[in-house]
View (tube, rainbow, N blue to C red):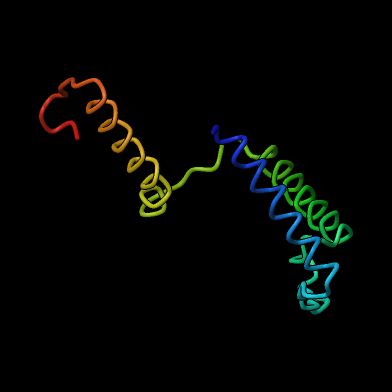
Length: 111
């Protein structure tokens, strides 16, 4: 059985169970969120539109601010190390997988 067919079968059976719980009145309702946290309700379309609009406004403001600068934003000191650490960790893991898959050898001290 392929992954796609397993996902489809799982969705169909879960949705049928959900509809049955709704019909019998056993499906618990989601608690109402206070107005300040309404954007966390992923079923509220108005809140989703508002959050996405706010995101686009922030991105536009950052774009306009960065456009006025002569140079790009440069990271300095420990912030650079923290920003690049995840990339380095994934690069090392990928290199180890490549070496183990190809049974090749890298120079000593590479990893």
